[in-house]
Length: 453
Image (cartoon, rainbow, N blue to C red; front, side):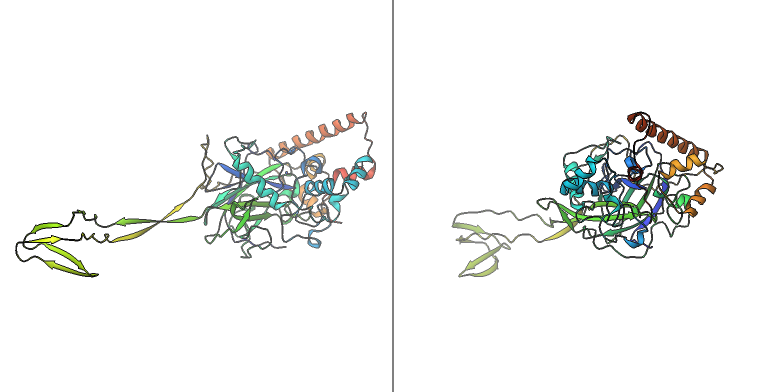
């Protein structure tokens, strides 16, 4: 599988978890260099989602999948080359709204959701128009983000040759990198630029510093929930033409789509961006001051030698130079011609209102890759199972995770994930009188293994 891009990758590095609150993987934040106080996110992202779990429910409900089935066998059989994918939330939400009988049948019998493992019905995809219009509405209302009140929700602002910084939350093992990105200038996710430049693949950097952690199948050795961030330089010939909004007042929209190489995916997401265009302003510059104008009624005046007078008679103009003193009668006042001037063209950028921030994000400053300590730990079976999140993987990927050393910090985070999984299981058993009452099918659909048949 290949996924081309017209972007140039600046650098990709790991971030601290504290700033991010979000899920495989989901784009939780995107900031453009033309307004660093406005932060967008991937389409379909749920800001209120539970991000501690690696399991399908609740950790993966808003994860975009670029396949006809959210749960599927082998992405190459149903890969979606256009659009922005689908998710469990988008599919189940459509059923609940448009197929109420099916929804009530499953709900009344307390069954697991069957729809994510079926081909997505028309309309069940992630809603591109709704996502963009919603962000524009949040931006209009100056809605602050929950993870950083100094940022407001909105469509990231960029210019040609500008920078877009994307933050991805990796839920479990196959939410890793490397990521590839493309752009659609029409803003409808139907035609991607096909410049064969794979983001992150042409860097002369070690894999763990040059892109989000992950092998050829985007499986990470450190499979606990974790964030990563990468920065894209947009093309110099950027030309965003998408128009949204009920009145068509959200203009200059492009869509950027980024995805990894997971067999159970691909996973990633779409980000809408809004181009800030240069505006040409014409401003006349006067080279000379205008001549003063004296208006007098017809009367006899005295002229002296070397004065110049202009006489218009019958539509004909005659300029006369006085050669001697005398008296003439002025019968018409002639206005002087307007002074010569030239037009100066000045390029300006029309920007949206910028709100003050306590801590600038310094988006134009390259992200410095963080050093990864020497990995000398290995995960236990229990830790490995917690990281897999109840999913199935190819045996070669599992063996690789077992045998790939991890750092002490990564092992601690995996152990924390084990405790989270135990607490979730205990709560479920307490609700069932200490035992699980699910049948095999219900347990399967509750886990929803994102796996190929």
